[in-house]
Each structure stands twice: as C-alpha cells, then as structure tokens.
Image (cartoon, rainbow, N blue to C red):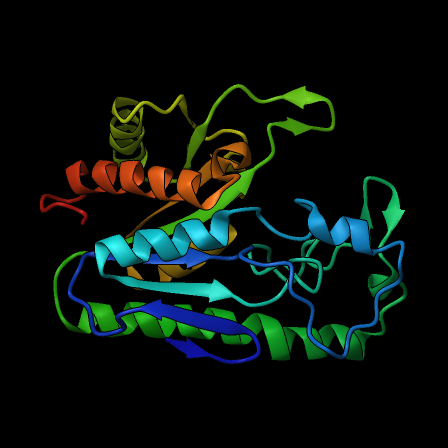
Length: 251
C-alpha cells in the first residue's frame, strides 16, 4: 500500500492480472488546511462530497482479484478528479443551492494549487500503474468504481448497477449481462451516460494507454454495511471473471 496526501495505491502494483481499478470519489476526507463551517458539515456526509461505499467496494474487489487500485484521498468537493479542469463543476461552488464555504470566490492561485496538489498526483499514479502493468504484457481492463443515490433530486432510480461506456459497446453489454446474471438490475449508460462525457477519468487514461475502459456505478443503498459491500464485491468479481474483453478473460 502506498499513501500520500492525494492518492492511495491498494493491492499489488506488480500484479499480472488484466485489471486496474480506480476510485475517484472514495472518501469525504478534507486535508487539514481546509476550514469548514458547521453548516458545511452535513453536506460532507452526502453524495456531493463522495461516493458512499465506493472506496470500500474498491478495496474488496482489489483484494479478491489481486490487482492494483488507485484511490483518491480527498473529497470531490476539493476538486473532482472525474472532471476536466475546464469543467464548471471541477470545483463545485454549490450543492442543491447550498454555497460550499471553502469553494467561494477562489483566486486562480488556489485553483492552481488544488490542481497541482490534489488533482494531478492522482492522475499521475493512474498512468504509472497502467504503464507498469502494460510493461508486463497482455491486455488490461481499466474499471472506474462509483456509487449513485437511489433518489436524486426527486428522481427514483430503480436500477441497481450501471455500466458506463463511450466506445466499447460490446464489452459493456457483456459486462452488463454478467452483472444481471449475478442478480443485479443492470442498465447501460445509466444513471449517467459515458457517451455524454460522464466517464472523464476512465476515458482519459484508457485512451492514453490504448486499453478498454468502463465505469461501474452501484446504487449506494446496496453498500450500506460491510457485509453488503462484501456480497456486492463477490458478485461483481464473478461477473468480471466471466467477462471476455479482447479474447482472454478480464480477471
């Protein structure tokens, strides 16, 4: 395990499994230099701050598949590693109309500091893990792990799993089928669409390294306890074991 201020590497960096996992919204942690108000605190426990359960799910999948995982160590409210720095919500100023105190009126110097301190180190480690794995030969699937809320702004989401993609339609369809076989209500490109820019991180690094990439979205009420997370991890891993990417099994 390798940990610094911005990124944590879990699992085996020297593995030969054809799978690398990322978790962009693993935690609601704030670095010590950030001062938050009492009004901010409830928002730090919501999906606006992190993907509930996604970090532990990533750890459990990495453990079972004996692969490498790259996890962000800061809240997405600091800056969102699953967004381009030019995106309006790369540093989110509001959540459901609430003004996030530590993101108001930021000078360009602070935005640049966050990019340099928190954003780029995370992406550098993904590139490094992929390069090291590809140097050992064979194909690789890059899988980004996220969670979503059952109710978003009044919209009830019935699906339990979403497989997001922008290019690899057949692989995504096969993965979705295998997840369905594991008992999950699975849909493609929901609750967000990879074809509309919803998988920035996976697309950035997968395209750069020439590997197949997907994003997995899990409804977060399926991740409400350690026992539940481990059950989901077992079933996702079985789906991955069955998945064919370019011929050999993905994991």
